[in-house]
Amino acid sequence: MERADVEKVARLARLAVGPGELQEYQQRLGAVLDYVRLLDEADNLQGVQPLYHPLPLQNVFREDEAGPSLVREAALANACRTDGQYFLVPRILEEK
Image 1 (cartoon, one colour):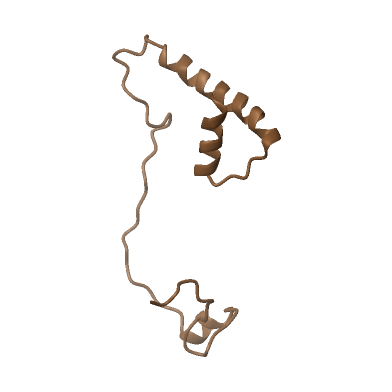
Image 2 (tube, rainbow, N blue to C red):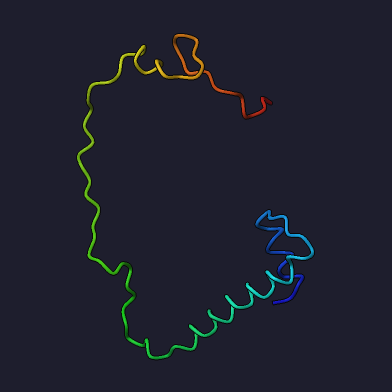
């Protein structure tokens, strides 16, 4: 794996990688890619169905039924900030 590739991967992942770390990550990522190449060489898998999960699991869903709701005072009881009617949260989006 080339140094420029490691720098690009770090930039895309928004990781701050120092110059001293680049060589270490270059070796580690190269080892991962070498292992993937090794797996690509396995040709004795012809006709083997993909195994999605080793255990026969299935989701157990319950019916979605309406139930009793909390009264407003109970719902707001542990809120950090409230105006008595609604939860108050910090603004995170700019208005346009």
